[in-house]
Length: 349
Image 1 (cartoon, rainbow, N blue to C red):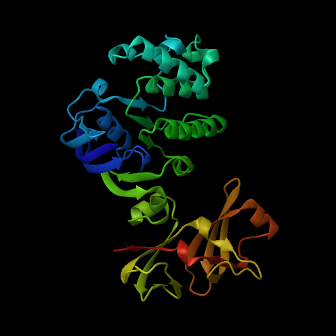
Image 2 (cartoon, rainbow, N blue to C red):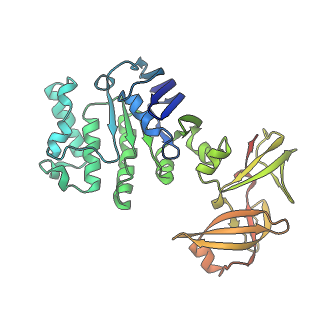
């Protein structure tokens, strides 16, 4: 387990303030947030690469706050892999072993296992400058895991890869995590990657922890309007909640759950949860009339701007190209839209 308690880090022009997080052995823990929010700095503080001004870091119960990086037994993989171009794949994997006191038999067994597991047998003598992106990432993983780390820290590990390699490596990461049984802490801006890999995570904003918990909660039950906007909950509407219902101007909707509070707040609804309702479709417990005010093609889907009738409340939906083509949808069309109450989320002031 990685335990971070009240961690404060000060560097020129930026400060991480009183961060508290836990990542267990069963966790792939994702750190998300805007660029410049302190995600990579937090990884480096955990790894011992930057000094901390307050708080503690514990790995498997051991306080490592004052230890140098090589004494913490953590693996760190950067997005650019940071491989040594003058060394072969074999020498890159072995680099650092001399500083960690592994005996010859352990080194040999570990190396052979990782080479087989990461399918590196055919490229061991190759220079790293002649490797593909996916090969470089597998070598970087082998080098980090060669030292038998107690946790693996991954800073944007897939961002430099093309889509084919990216899919292969994320499947590999999930498999390695299940096999090794150590915490993985992942920094990423790719939401599909985060949702695929991570079970828990946290949102950072300007060096402050905005929200932490299960990944699904971050994306479907954000704690603040900032978190909601950041994770793509495009529809955020001021509302008043009374008796389990939210009033949005001329529209009233039912909220899910028995613990709904009363008061003023913001109602959130993800754009992919708004569907086009066809005749006879009773899958949605809220069905409304709306006029399409704009349509913007996004490749495999359209971002559709909607204006409710009556009232003119604006909503945004993501509909597939197949749905748009099948119904021959155009701006100014009047349509029926629907969503389930379980998709609604109230954020209170």
